Length: 395
Image (cartoon, rainbow, N blue to C red; front, side, top):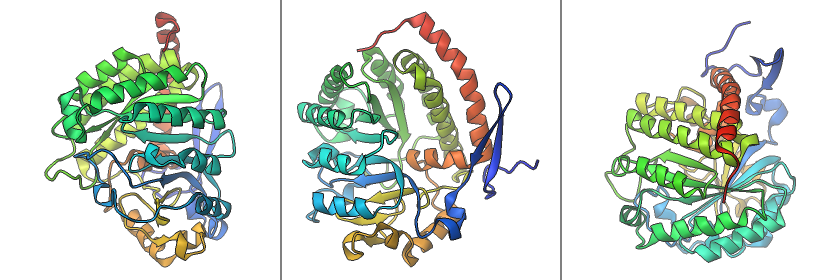
């Protein structure tokens, strides 16, 4: 059998792994089968920028030019029309702006989530602690069978975080938000908590201290770091060098082994191996300036803006507005403008470290997925040992 390189467009292909015999896992890219899939795409992740309102002024924000303008938000009725015509999709990622400033947030999530295997992910700046707690509780009660991941943004400890985020006292408020959310977990086992840290040249030396503090506080299920991307509000900021990021990500892995082994043992090996695969590709991208895999943004990943605009990728210009297409997502998705952007994505000239795009693209490539599955097998044993040594404890 000829083994395709990680960047080869050979689909479908068979990934063979050895685990109690030979297990066959079929991985294929639906977008390559144009005659079968289009005009009905399948989205693994639909990102919904539910509002452009934000109560922070983050130096690192790539979306800063879109924030707090006067564009008209989609109404709940419009979201329902969109969902009714939306092609098949799996998970949703709620973004913004600050998502919890959208009063209809729980209703929108309930509109798009119907099956128990669907997951919800949402970042928050953690500023309005009790409002965030109440919204998260409402969503957990409405969708008790859906995995709900809430990430609280933390870029440094104390005043440095406040300066990066442009809000005095933001660090203390974010920690309070984590504490309040952690108190919800006994009643809502579908809730997962993480910290979200953007790493760049001005904070990379402080990030290890932050990660250790988050692990010590023990509010989160796992830790997340993401290198700076896009054109940030503060000019001159740069992403970390690949070896700076690797040092941080190696520490994060060790801390996550301990956290996940205790808090989410059934998910630990899968999550740890996925995060490690993502980190390897981000490091390769920062070192070479180019992805080693094909990015699936615009294929199995789509973006819906708060005002009805549709993007293939957060970093690209919109390809149409659903209000102009009768709320028909597929009509925009298969438009000439979308096809032109899709062809450009395939050139890899726009390579970046976006964790959602890379994370959802990796399973469509043989070697990264093979490497992840082998690492997952090794981690299963380590998670068991860590859990036995630490016992069971959480907030």
